[in-house]
Structure formats: structure tokens, C-alpha cells
Amino acid sequence: MPEVTFYVLQSQSINDRYLFACKLIEKAYRSGHFCYVLTGSDEQSQIIDDLLWTFRAGSFIPHQQYTGETPAVEKVVLIGSLNAPQNWQKTLINLSSQYPQDFELAERILEILDNSEETKEAGRNRYRRYQQAGVALATHKIEQ
Image 1: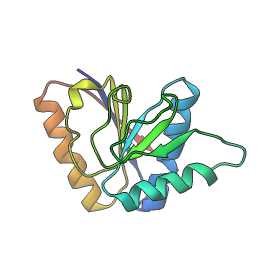
Image 2 (image 1 turned 180 degrees about the vertical axis):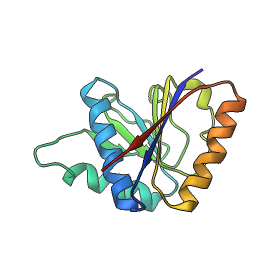
Image 3 (image 1 turned 135 degrees about the vertical axis):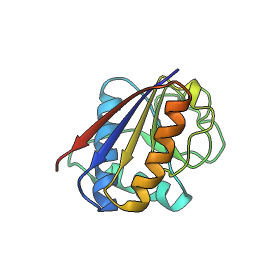
Image 4 (image 1 turned 60 degrees about the vertical axis):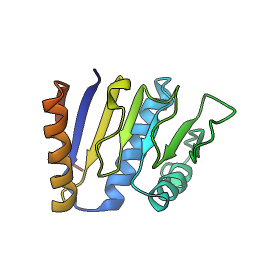
């Protein structure tokens, strides 16, 4: 069973949520983890893809959008709204409002919530489902 960590931002800004996601992606990458970023749509995938190029000067994180084709290179962060492919299931960053399918294949799931009611409600529902599945849960409130 994976460890699931919820990061709850004080901001209601979706942009702050995306920037925080980029920081977590960078931290995972620097630790040697090539994570999968689960998004809710192709549009959201494109936003994260673009931000990873620009969120921090001098930062480089190899990444690409996942459209169902397994990448030729394994050492890349994948971003997409489809289920994570094999070899990218260890660390999952969930930006979607959905409960990840096959979540039990992950070692670690990072859930990032902003302070909007819609995002918090979807997060509460996922928290309850993880709890019912017997997953170890942690929550961190992030002051920005």
C-alpha cells in the first residue's frame, strides 16, 4: 500500500497550486524519482508541461506529456490524464479531482489541494476513500 500525503495550500489560486506541484516534481526528480503527474485534462497537462520549463530560472526537469505511448526514455517525468504506465507508478502526483485508478501500485501519492471549496471537497472524498482502503495518510498545511 502506498503512503499518501495531502498538501493543503492556504491560497485559493490554481496557479499557486500548479507552482507548488512544480516544486514537488523538481524535488522528486532531484531525489532520483521520475514521477507521474496525473491531471484532470489535456489542458491541465499542457499547463504543467509549460510551467516546468519556466517556473524556476535554471531548473531543468526532463518531462513530456503522456498520451498512451510508452516513452522511449525511462528517465523522464510524465504528465497526463490517463492511468500511469508501468515504470512510472512508484510516485504519483495527483492534480486531478479523481481517485487514481490502480493507486495500490504506487509507493507514494502526493495530493495537492488549494483552498477552494471545490478542490477541498474532492480532496476530502479521496481522503475518505484512501482511509477506507487502509492507506497511511499524512496532511501538511502549506503557508505561502
